[in-house]
Length: 301
Image 1 (cartoon, rainbow, N blue to C red):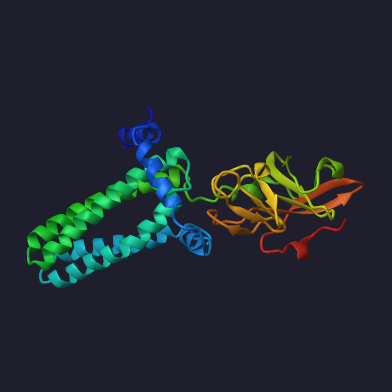
Image 2: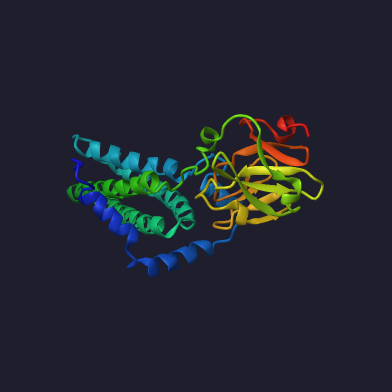
């Protein structure tokens, strides 16, 4: 039970894990190996950009579901072949889920990577136990297969709890710009004189205490996006502006200035975008309703 006096043993253990440096050497090696994989659309697909959120949690449902179902069948008589088949299905689908998880993990901050590394280690241990279970079942050693299966399911539970800490307490994979529409008041907000925004450069300003990035094109068009990257909150105002987009300096996510669309991951969510107008030489902006294009919602100058 949670203690009113403070965090219990589990939370204290996770806090120690977040701050320990003992695994950093191994973490750096694995991260470099993941980054060495050739880039391309497949990487964005594994991040889940097409889905709007990380795809890893979706993929892990299959091995976890089949292994849990196998455990139930192991408790029933006459279900040896069905249980063995489910264990095999879980093993065959664990690989894609793991690859998606590693691709996401490599773009996290150090504290998150430490927790994710142990999460992955638990899952690898579970896969090894289930591989042993599957082999034992095929060889007719059903009792050993069941024992290894239950051990594997227990380790999966531990790995899942660590993954929950990573996802929910450390906000790995969450949209870090989701709160912007609730923090910005309706209506137009002044950002400064047009001359305050050099053409082609990203400038940071605030609207209702929400940081935004302002970019004025050479033709005079002004774009405004939420400054905190939806991936992990990186400052877009410190990123590179090129080809009508801004690149996050932390992990390389690319967002279209005209509407905030995430044209390249690891970000899976678009940036909140603002309509803009120039009144008496002053730039003003208002939060754009979601689903409206830049052309349809652009305010008159």
